[in-house]
Length: 192
Image (cartoon, rainbow, N blue to C red):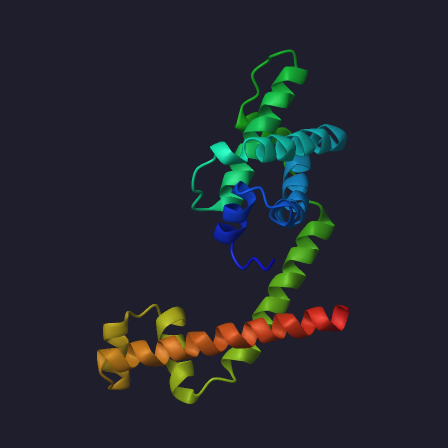
């Protein structure tokens, strides 16, 4: 089963597809785990809570409605569950989100360095991909995203009609998307 989007993943998950549950778990467990540890500063509590969260999610899947943003839904739901568990462990002393963030939410030097490295790699890759576009496409991208111009103003600057600007922009974005996907595929194949 090939799942291309969170909407498709959620649809099949709600239908009880085991592969969809497995994919959902693999995709979001690591992110939720790190987030939970940052909130709670309690790895074992976070792991227990997260496992119970996924079990409950699976058991209640048929009751769930359509989700517009699956990632946000999972983060919010897990955060609520974790806060309840922390409050229960603190003998029902209310713990506000502000208290959680103040006391536990910290970043290590390694996390910041890794994030900066990823940003650098993304910027470098994007720069290379943009430079592969035609001069006209590069200009449209620059005016749209780096000069914050709307399509009407771009048409005037480039002496083009409005629809042509939209077409050039769409083609440029399509090329960037395709090149980006190819770049990701190449990096995955190198790791294999």
